[in-house]
Length: 166
Ligand code: HEC
Image: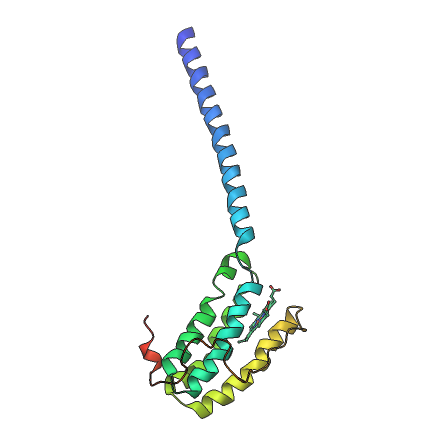
């Protein structure tokens, strides 16, 4: 009887010890996850990419390189992916912007319609800036550049949005 009791006490003891170690490990893991999240980009770093891809897109569309224009658009959106994790409260505003406000620009890219593209592209600049003001960054104003942000690629060339690999 006594032996059985001792065995139970020992087993419970081992179990409790295990649980404590496990909870310490979980705690440590959470700290490490938080540390990794802390060094991942939030909005500022991806927005630099958004800015550059947005400018490049215009010159690609103008050059009839619609595949490149759509590629710029696609990865302009993708640039914000880290914010899903690092800024979960703010990310949905970007998602809505890209999927709804920006949709007419993408539509013009797919239609290879430069006239429509230029109109929608110009209109969307104010929407970029509306979000900046709304989030307390009214001092960040996007302006259209006279040349692409990146000079290392050819903007002219014949291609279509569907050429961009899925
Ligand atoms: C959902 C809101 C939102 C939308 C939409 C948005 N931005 Fe931003 N943008 C921000 C915020 C917030 C910052 C400031 C970054 C920070 O402090 O984390 C910023 C900063 C920037 C910067 C400055 C980056 C730097 O640090 O040099 C540029 C350039 C920029 N945005 C371009 C654009 C362009 C172009 C568009 C439209 C195609 C756009 N943004 C749309 C929220 C937005």
